[in-house]
Length: 291
Image 1 (tube, helix red, strand yellow):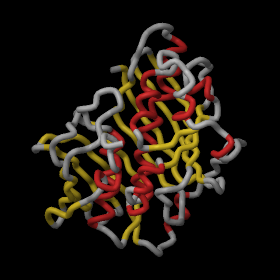
Image 2 (tube, rainbow, N blue to C red):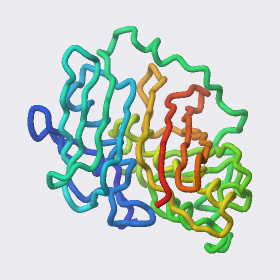
Image 3 (cartoon, rainbow, N blue to C red):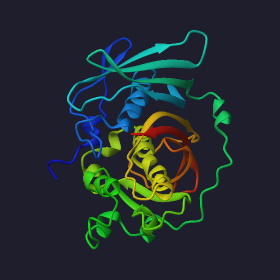
Image 4 (cartoon, rainbow, N blue to C red):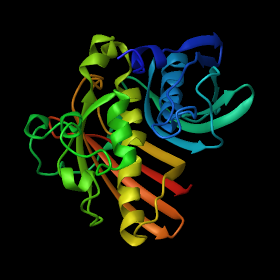
């Protein structure tokens, strides 16, 4: 397990200046291009930077634009600027002065009643608990690696999350019906032994949004363009939190995603994350393009 990234080390903020939060390398690479910064980490560091600069506040929503590819070897600097007379802050993520991502964050002071703005009618799908489904790590031991979709198998080998799809055939692209995709996820036992409980729960959820964003979009690409291998790339993502309580970084969460392809080279994906009690803790939308 020596090559497995340790989330508690990667997601550790350091306040470098009054309005600058730094994250030291190495960072998370993508499962396919390991030297390229994982987009989910760009999201997570924006969340953590705001938490670091404004500990008295909570984040309601984040609108992120992925500007340019980052690397895993250079520090990430998050410049946090408050927008005067508004509840918004702007966050710019840079590496060696190159802009990697920008974020527009809405925050509010903890204890105020703005949680009413997060009301949602999203209902948890009628699925069983995570213990009722096979871990992908176990499933990979019994199937030909060529059968499993490369991206999914690389996600599992990454060692960040224990993942348990509701429909294994859909996860492996045996089925390509364009239906919503459901999967339970939780930090692996290895991550929990490495102090995952010390990481912001919201940052962990943001990793999950990008971790699973590609599955539904790839299924649609392969359904409509048979035999054309595509790795979708993210352009922007909007996240809205719906929870009042603190998010458990070590909990089990059900991710639901569905993708609507508008053209042969663009996708729009929507997702929701539920806790085991059935509460929708987060909803998100991601727009991407065909890489």
